Image (spheres, helix red, strand yellow):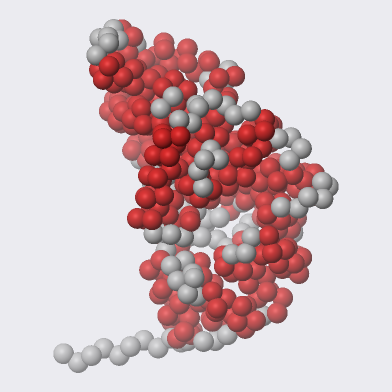
Length: 424
Protein backbone atom coordinates (compact mmCIF):
# COMPACT_ATOMS: atom_id res chain seq x y z
CA UNK A 1 0.00 0.00 0.00
CA UNK A 2 1.28 3.48 -0.83
CA UNK A 3 2.07 5.99 1.91
CA UNK A 4 -0.92 8.15 0.96
CA UNK A 5 -3.22 5.12 0.91
CA UNK A 6 -2.09 4.09 4.38
CA UNK A 7 -2.72 7.59 5.75
CA UNK A 8 -6.16 7.71 4.12
CA UNK A 9 -7.02 4.31 5.56
CA UNK A 10 -5.85 5.27 9.06
CA UNK A 11 -7.82 8.53 8.99
CA UNK A 12 -10.98 6.76 7.76
CA UNK A 13 -10.74 4.15 10.51
CA UNK A 14 -10.07 6.77 13.20
CA UNK A 15 -12.74 9.24 12.08
CA UNK A 16 -15.75 7.94 14.09
CA UNK A 17 -13.81 7.87 17.34
CA UNK A 18 -12.11 11.21 16.72
CA UNK A 19 -15.31 12.94 15.64
CA UNK A 20 -17.15 11.57 18.65
CA UNK A 21 -14.53 12.89 21.05
CA UNK A 22 -14.30 16.29 19.33
CA UNK A 23 -18.07 16.65 19.39
CA UNK A 24 -18.02 15.93 23.12
CA UNK A 25 -15.42 18.68 23.57
CA UNK A 26 -17.07 21.35 21.41
CA UNK A 27 -20.78 20.38 21.38
CA UNK A 28 -21.08 21.80 17.88
CA UNK A 29 -21.05 19.73 14.68
CA UNK A 30 -19.43 22.36 12.47
CA UNK A 31 -16.68 23.12 15.00
CA UNK A 32 -15.97 19.40 15.49
CA UNK A 33 -15.84 18.79 11.73
CA UNK A 34 -13.53 21.76 11.14
CA UNK A 35 -11.24 20.63 13.95
CA UNK A 36 -11.09 17.11 12.53
CA UNK A 37 -10.37 18.35 9.01
CA UNK A 38 -7.55 20.54 10.30
CA UNK A 39 -6.10 17.56 12.17
CA UNK A 40 -6.24 15.53 8.95
CA UNK A 41 -4.35 18.21 7.05
CA UNK A 42 -1.68 18.25 9.75
CA UNK A 43 -1.51 14.45 9.61
CA UNK A 44 -0.86 14.57 5.85
CA UNK A 45 2.05 16.92 6.54
CA UNK A 46 3.39 15.34 9.74
CA UNK A 47 3.03 11.58 9.32
CA UNK A 48 5.13 11.17 6.15
CA UNK A 49 7.98 13.10 7.81
CA UNK A 50 7.83 11.67 11.35
CA UNK A 51 6.32 8.25 10.72
CA UNK A 52 2.90 6.94 11.76
CA UNK A 53 1.71 7.69 15.31
CA UNK A 54 1.23 4.85 17.76
CA UNK A 55 -2.50 5.57 17.84
CA UNK A 56 -3.88 7.60 14.91
CA UNK A 57 -7.21 8.28 16.67
CA UNK A 58 -5.47 9.67 19.76
CA UNK A 59 -3.22 11.85 17.58
CA UNK A 60 -6.15 13.25 15.60
CA UNK A 61 -8.18 13.90 18.76
CA UNK A 62 -5.35 15.77 20.44
CA UNK A 63 -4.39 17.87 17.41
CA UNK A 64 -8.03 18.48 16.47
CA UNK A 65 -8.90 19.56 19.98
CA UNK A 66 -6.05 22.09 20.08
CA UNK A 67 -6.97 23.36 16.63
CA UNK A 68 -10.62 23.72 17.62
CA UNK A 69 -9.77 25.52 20.84
CA UNK A 70 -7.55 27.90 18.90
CA UNK A 71 -10.33 28.59 16.39
CA UNK A 72 -12.89 29.19 19.13
CA UNK A 73 -10.56 31.53 20.98
CA UNK A 74 -9.80 33.50 17.84
CA UNK A 75 -13.47 33.93 17.10
CA UNK A 76 -14.26 34.95 20.65
CA UNK A 77 -11.11 37.08 21.03
CA UNK A 78 -10.83 35.77 24.57
CA UNK A 79 -7.37 34.28 24.87
CA UNK A 80 -4.13 33.68 22.96
CA UNK A 81 -3.18 30.40 21.32
CA UNK A 82 -2.02 27.56 23.58
CA UNK A 83 1.66 27.59 24.47
CA UNK A 84 3.93 25.99 21.87
CA UNK A 85 4.99 23.18 24.20
CA UNK A 86 1.35 22.18 24.59
CA UNK A 87 0.87 21.45 20.91
CA UNK A 88 4.36 20.45 19.73
CA UNK A 89 5.18 17.60 22.13
CA UNK A 90 2.79 15.19 20.46
CA UNK A 91 4.45 11.97 21.60
CA UNK A 92 3.77 12.39 25.33
CA UNK A 93 0.28 13.78 24.82
CA UNK A 94 -0.54 11.04 22.34
CA UNK A 95 0.51 8.35 24.81
CA UNK A 96 -1.63 9.91 27.52
CA UNK A 97 -4.69 10.12 25.30
CA UNK A 98 -4.14 6.62 23.93
CA UNK A 99 -4.24 5.24 27.46
CA UNK A 100 -7.54 7.03 28.07
CA UNK A 101 -9.15 5.83 24.82
CA UNK A 102 -10.19 2.66 26.62
CA UNK A 103 -11.97 4.69 29.32
CA UNK A 104 -15.71 5.12 29.59
CA UNK A 105 -15.80 8.52 27.84
CA UNK A 106 -14.09 7.25 24.71
CA UNK A 107 -16.04 3.99 24.58
CA UNK A 108 -19.25 6.01 24.56
CA UNK A 109 -18.16 8.76 22.16
CA UNK A 110 -19.05 6.95 18.94
CA UNK A 111 -22.43 5.77 20.17
CA UNK A 112 -23.19 9.27 21.45
CA UNK A 113 -22.35 10.65 18.01
CA UNK A 114 -24.51 8.03 16.30
CA UNK A 115 -27.52 8.71 18.48
CA UNK A 116 -27.21 12.48 18.04
CA UNK A 117 -27.14 12.12 14.26
CA UNK A 118 -30.16 9.83 14.46
CA UNK A 119 -32.24 12.34 16.40
CA UNK A 120 -36.03 11.86 16.05
CA UNK A 121 -36.44 15.48 14.89
CA UNK A 122 -34.95 14.30 11.57
CA UNK A 123 -36.71 12.11 8.98
CA UNK A 124 -35.19 8.62 8.87
CA UNK A 125 -33.50 9.16 5.50
CA UNK A 126 -31.83 12.33 6.76
CA UNK A 127 -30.76 10.64 9.99
CA UNK A 128 -28.88 7.92 8.16
CA UNK A 129 -27.44 10.23 5.50
CA UNK A 130 -26.04 12.79 7.94
CA UNK A 131 -24.65 10.06 10.18
CA UNK A 132 -22.84 8.49 7.24
CA UNK A 133 -21.37 11.86 6.34
CA UNK A 134 -20.35 12.91 9.84
CA UNK A 135 -19.46 9.62 11.49
CA UNK A 136 -17.82 7.73 8.65
CA UNK A 137 -16.81 10.62 6.40
CA UNK A 138 -18.28 9.08 3.26
CA UNK A 139 -18.54 11.42 0.30
CA UNK A 140 -21.90 12.61 -0.94
CA UNK A 141 -21.38 10.48 -4.05
CA UNK A 142 -20.80 7.35 -1.98
CA UNK A 143 -23.86 7.98 0.17
CA UNK A 144 -26.01 8.74 -2.87
CA UNK A 145 -24.94 5.44 -4.42
CA UNK A 146 -25.92 3.56 -1.27
CA UNK A 147 -29.39 5.14 -1.43
CA UNK A 148 -29.74 4.83 -5.23
CA UNK A 149 -30.40 8.59 -5.58
CA UNK A 150 -28.65 11.45 -7.34
CA UNK A 151 -25.78 13.38 -5.77
CA UNK A 152 -27.60 16.73 -5.76
CA UNK A 153 -30.59 15.20 -3.98
CA UNK A 154 -28.33 13.67 -1.35
CA UNK A 155 -26.39 16.92 -0.90
CA UNK A 156 -29.65 18.73 -0.17
CA UNK A 157 -30.73 15.97 2.23
CA UNK A 158 -27.51 16.22 4.25
CA UNK A 159 -27.53 20.03 4.28
CA UNK A 160 -31.13 20.10 5.55
CA UNK A 161 -30.33 17.52 8.22
CA UNK A 162 -27.33 19.43 9.59
CA UNK A 163 -29.29 22.68 9.60
CA UNK A 164 -32.16 21.04 11.42
CA UNK A 165 -29.85 19.62 14.09
CA UNK A 166 -28.39 23.10 14.64
CA UNK A 167 -31.80 24.84 14.67
CA UNK A 168 -33.34 22.25 17.00
CA UNK A 169 -30.69 22.79 19.65
CA UNK A 170 -30.15 19.04 19.92
CA UNK A 171 -28.44 18.27 23.26
CA UNK A 172 -25.03 16.71 22.76
CA UNK A 173 -25.50 14.10 25.44
CA UNK A 174 -25.92 10.35 25.36
CA UNK A 175 -29.69 9.72 25.14
CA UNK A 176 -31.48 7.85 27.89
CA UNK A 177 -32.74 4.29 27.60
CA UNK A 178 -36.12 5.18 26.07
CA UNK A 179 -34.62 7.52 23.45
CA UNK A 180 -31.96 4.95 22.56
CA UNK A 181 -34.63 2.36 21.83
CA UNK A 182 -36.58 4.80 19.65
CA UNK A 183 -33.51 5.64 17.56
CA UNK A 184 -32.13 2.12 17.36
CA UNK A 185 -33.50 1.29 13.90
CA UNK A 186 -31.86 4.35 12.32
CA UNK A 187 -28.56 3.67 14.08
CA UNK A 188 -28.59 0.02 12.99
CA UNK A 189 -29.25 1.04 9.38
CA UNK A 190 -26.36 3.50 9.51
CA UNK A 191 -23.99 0.81 10.84
CA UNK A 192 -25.14 -1.54 8.06
CA UNK A 193 -24.45 1.05 5.37
CA UNK A 194 -20.98 1.78 6.78
CA UNK A 195 -20.25 -1.93 6.46
CA UNK A 196 -21.53 -2.03 2.88
CA UNK A 197 -19.32 0.88 1.89
CA UNK A 198 -16.27 -1.03 3.12
CA UNK A 199 -17.47 -4.29 1.61
CA UNK A 200 -18.18 -2.83 -1.85
CA UNK A 201 -14.60 -2.34 -2.97
CA UNK A 202 -12.00 -3.79 -5.29
CA UNK A 203 -8.96 -5.80 -4.28
CA UNK A 204 -6.57 -2.87 -4.57
CA UNK A 205 -8.67 -0.79 -2.19
CA UNK A 206 -9.60 -3.63 0.16
CA UNK A 207 -6.80 -3.06 2.71
CA UNK A 208 -7.67 0.63 2.92
CA UNK A 209 -11.43 0.05 3.09
CA UNK A 210 -11.41 -2.96 5.42
CA UNK A 211 -11.39 -0.68 8.50
CA UNK A 212 -14.92 0.41 7.56
CA UNK A 213 -16.13 -3.19 7.78
CA UNK A 214 -14.24 -3.70 11.01
CA UNK A 215 -15.59 -0.45 12.45
CA UNK A 216 -19.15 -1.43 11.54
CA UNK A 217 -18.70 -4.78 13.28
CA UNK A 218 -17.27 -3.04 16.33
CA UNK A 219 -20.21 -0.62 16.42
CA UNK A 220 -22.66 -3.50 16.06
CA UNK A 221 -21.04 -5.26 19.00
CA UNK A 222 -21.29 -2.05 21.04
CA UNK A 223 -24.97 -1.82 20.18
CA UNK A 224 -25.41 -5.45 21.17
CA UNK A 225 -23.84 -4.69 24.53
CA UNK A 226 -26.40 -1.91 25.06
CA UNK A 227 -29.33 -3.97 23.73
CA UNK A 228 -28.43 -7.49 24.78
CA UNK A 229 -31.93 -8.95 24.30
CA UNK A 230 -32.73 -7.24 20.98
CA UNK A 231 -32.88 -9.96 18.28
CA UNK A 232 -32.50 -7.51 15.39
CA UNK A 233 -29.18 -6.26 16.76
CA UNK A 234 -28.10 -9.89 17.13
CA UNK A 235 -29.12 -10.38 13.50
CA UNK A 236 -27.27 -7.29 12.34
CA UNK A 237 -24.07 -8.31 14.12
CA UNK A 238 -24.35 -11.86 12.78
CA UNK A 239 -24.93 -10.61 9.23
CA UNK A 240 -21.82 -8.41 9.28
CA UNK A 241 -19.67 -11.20 10.74
CA UNK A 242 -20.85 -13.79 8.22
CA UNK A 243 -20.30 -11.42 5.29
CA UNK A 244 -16.87 -10.27 6.44
CA UNK A 245 -15.78 -13.86 7.11
CA UNK A 246 -15.61 -14.36 3.33
CA UNK A 247 -13.30 -11.38 2.73
CA UNK A 248 -10.07 -13.41 2.19
CA UNK A 249 -11.71 -15.39 -0.62
CA UNK A 250 -13.50 -12.61 -2.50
CA UNK A 251 -10.60 -11.81 -4.87
CA UNK A 252 -8.08 -14.00 -6.66
CA UNK A 253 -4.30 -13.30 -6.69
CA UNK A 254 -4.77 -11.11 -9.78
CA UNK A 255 -7.35 -8.97 -8.01
CA UNK A 256 -10.31 -10.36 -9.94
CA UNK A 257 -13.68 -10.89 -8.22
CA UNK A 258 -14.41 -14.48 -7.20
CA UNK A 259 -18.12 -15.25 -7.07
CA UNK A 260 -19.50 -16.83 -3.92
CA UNK A 261 -20.05 -20.21 -5.55
CA UNK A 262 -16.42 -20.30 -6.76
CA UNK A 263 -14.74 -19.13 -3.55
CA UNK A 264 -12.26 -21.29 -1.63
CA UNK A 265 -14.29 -21.88 1.50
CA UNK A 266 -11.17 -22.95 3.34
CA UNK A 267 -10.15 -19.27 3.33
CA UNK A 268 -13.29 -18.16 5.13
CA UNK A 269 -12.80 -17.10 8.75
CA UNK A 270 -14.18 -19.96 10.82
CA UNK A 271 -13.99 -17.86 14.00
CA UNK A 272 -16.25 -15.16 12.53
CA UNK A 273 -18.60 -17.75 11.06
CA UNK A 274 -18.98 -19.57 14.39
CA UNK A 275 -19.72 -16.29 16.19
CA UNK A 276 -22.20 -15.27 13.51
CA UNK A 277 -24.00 -18.62 13.47
CA UNK A 278 -24.33 -18.59 17.25
CA UNK A 279 -25.90 -15.12 17.11
CA UNK A 280 -28.31 -16.16 14.33
CA UNK A 281 -29.50 -19.14 16.35
CA UNK A 282 -29.87 -17.00 19.47
CA UNK A 283 -31.82 -14.30 17.61
CA UNK A 284 -34.23 -16.74 15.96
CA UNK A 285 -35.08 -18.30 19.33
CA UNK A 286 -36.78 -15.01 20.24
CA UNK A 287 -39.36 -15.63 17.47
CA UNK A 288 -39.47 -11.92 16.59
CA UNK A 289 -38.17 -11.98 12.99
CA UNK A 290 -36.87 -8.81 11.41
CA UNK A 291 -35.01 -7.86 8.20
CA UNK A 292 -31.50 -8.20 9.67
CA UNK A 293 -32.30 -11.61 11.13
CA UNK A 294 -33.65 -12.82 7.77
CA UNK A 295 -30.57 -11.58 5.92
CA UNK A 296 -28.34 -13.18 8.55
CA UNK A 297 -30.25 -16.45 8.16
CA UNK A 298 -29.58 -16.33 4.39
CA UNK A 299 -25.87 -15.69 5.01
CA UNK A 300 -25.86 -18.54 7.52
CA UNK A 301 -27.18 -20.99 4.89
CA UNK A 302 -24.27 -20.07 2.65
CA UNK A 303 -21.81 -20.38 5.55
CA UNK A 304 -23.12 -23.81 6.57
CA UNK A 305 -22.76 -25.25 3.04
CA UNK A 306 -19.42 -27.06 2.83
CA UNK A 307 -19.58 -26.88 -0.97
CA UNK A 308 -21.49 -24.52 -3.26
CA UNK A 309 -23.66 -27.37 -4.53
CA UNK A 310 -24.78 -28.06 -0.95
CA UNK A 311 -26.45 -24.64 -0.69
CA UNK A 312 -30.14 -24.82 0.27
CA UNK A 313 -31.48 -22.53 -2.45
CA UNK A 314 -35.10 -23.46 -1.75
CA UNK A 315 -34.80 -22.16 1.81
CA UNK A 316 -32.96 -19.07 0.57
CA UNK A 317 -35.79 -18.38 -1.88
CA UNK A 318 -38.33 -18.66 0.97
CA UNK A 319 -36.30 -16.31 3.15
CA UNK A 320 -36.01 -13.72 0.38
CA UNK A 321 -39.79 -14.00 -0.07
CA UNK A 322 -40.20 -13.19 3.62
CA UNK A 323 -37.76 -10.29 3.29
CA UNK A 324 -39.75 -8.92 0.34
CA UNK A 325 -42.83 -8.80 2.57
CA UNK A 326 -40.94 -7.00 5.34
CA UNK A 327 -39.04 -4.56 3.12
CA UNK A 328 -40.41 -4.42 -0.43
CA UNK A 329 -37.49 -3.41 -2.63
CA UNK A 330 -36.39 -4.06 -6.23
CA UNK A 331 -32.90 -4.92 -4.94
CA UNK A 332 -34.30 -7.65 -2.68
CA UNK A 333 -36.28 -9.05 -5.60
CA UNK A 334 -33.11 -8.96 -7.70
CA UNK A 335 -31.28 -10.99 -5.06
CA UNK A 336 -34.16 -13.45 -4.84
CA UNK A 337 -33.93 -13.96 -8.59
CA UNK A 338 -30.49 -15.54 -8.11
CA UNK A 339 -32.08 -18.22 -5.92
CA UNK A 340 -34.91 -18.65 -8.42
CA UNK A 341 -32.38 -19.19 -11.22
CA UNK A 342 -30.84 -22.03 -9.21
CA UNK A 343 -34.21 -23.66 -8.54
CA UNK A 344 -36.32 -22.99 -11.66
CA UNK A 345 -33.72 -21.90 -14.20
CA UNK A 346 -32.53 -18.68 -15.84
CA UNK A 347 -35.71 -18.08 -17.84
CA UNK A 348 -37.86 -17.86 -14.70
CA UNK A 349 -35.33 -15.55 -13.07
CA UNK A 350 -35.16 -13.32 -16.15
CA UNK A 351 -38.94 -12.98 -16.22
CA UNK A 352 -38.76 -12.01 -12.56
CA UNK A 353 -36.25 -9.17 -12.99
CA UNK A 354 -37.35 -7.67 -16.31
CA UNK A 355 -40.10 -5.54 -14.66
CA UNK A 356 -37.41 -4.04 -12.40
CA UNK A 357 -35.31 -2.52 -15.19
CA UNK A 358 -36.78 0.99 -15.07
CA UNK A 359 -36.31 1.30 -11.30
CA UNK A 360 -32.81 -0.21 -11.41
CA UNK A 361 -31.64 1.52 -14.58
CA UNK A 362 -28.61 2.92 -12.77
CA UNK A 363 -27.73 -0.21 -10.78
CA UNK A 364 -24.66 -2.19 -11.81
CA UNK A 365 -25.78 -5.51 -10.33
CA UNK A 366 -29.07 -5.52 -12.24
CA UNK A 367 -27.33 -5.51 -15.63
CA UNK A 368 -24.66 -7.91 -14.44
CA UNK A 369 -27.29 -10.46 -13.43
CA UNK A 370 -29.38 -9.84 -16.54
CA UNK A 371 -26.36 -10.41 -18.75
CA UNK A 372 -25.47 -13.60 -16.89
CA UNK A 373 -29.00 -14.99 -17.25
CA UNK A 374 -29.12 -14.10 -20.95
CA UNK A 375 -25.76 -15.79 -21.44
CA UNK A 376 -27.11 -18.99 -19.83
CA UNK A 377 -30.01 -18.84 -22.30
CA UNK A 378 -27.57 -18.54 -25.25
CA UNK A 379 -28.82 -15.05 -26.09
CA UNK A 380 -25.34 -13.70 -26.63
CA UNK A 381 -26.09 -10.42 -28.41
CA UNK A 382 -28.57 -9.36 -25.72
CA UNK A 383 -26.14 -10.44 -23.02
CA UNK A 384 -23.44 -8.25 -24.56
CA UNK A 385 -25.75 -5.22 -24.44
CA UNK A 386 -26.53 -5.86 -20.75
CA UNK A 387 -22.85 -6.38 -19.91
CA UNK A 388 -21.85 -3.16 -21.68
CA UNK A 389 -24.38 -1.30 -19.56
CA UNK A 390 -23.03 -2.98 -16.42
CA UNK A 391 -19.47 -1.88 -17.24
CA UNK A 392 -20.67 1.70 -17.67
CA UNK A 393 -22.25 1.54 -14.19
CA UNK A 394 -19.41 -0.34 -12.44
CA UNK A 395 -18.44 1.14 -9.08
CA UNK A 396 -14.98 -0.43 -8.97
CA UNK A 397 -12.34 -1.61 -11.42
CA UNK A 398 -12.86 -5.18 -10.17
CA UNK A 399 -16.56 -5.06 -11.08
CA UNK A 400 -15.77 -3.82 -14.58
CA UNK A 401 -13.06 -6.47 -15.03
CA UNK A 402 -15.44 -9.21 -13.94
CA UNK A 403 -17.99 -8.18 -16.57
CA UNK A 404 -15.31 -7.95 -19.28
CA UNK A 405 -14.41 -11.56 -18.49
CA UNK A 406 -17.96 -12.57 -19.40
CA UNK A 407 -17.80 -10.56 -22.62
CA UNK A 408 -14.50 -12.24 -23.54
CA UNK A 409 -16.14 -15.61 -22.97
CA UNK A 410 -19.02 -14.65 -25.27
CA UNK A 411 -16.56 -13.59 -27.96
CA UNK A 412 -14.54 -16.78 -27.57
CA UNK A 413 -17.64 -18.96 -27.81
CA UNK A 414 -18.81 -17.10 -30.89
CA UNK A 415 -22.03 -16.03 -29.19
CA UNK A 416 -21.34 -12.43 -30.21
CA UNK A 417 -20.29 -11.45 -33.70
CA UNK A 418 -17.27 -9.16 -34.11
CA UNK A 419 -18.25 -6.19 -36.30
CA UNK A 420 -16.45 -6.10 -39.65
CA UNK A 421 -14.00 -3.24 -40.13
CA UNK A 422 -15.24 -0.47 -42.39
CA UNK A 423 -13.26 0.24 -45.54
CA UNK A 424 -11.17 3.40 -45.47
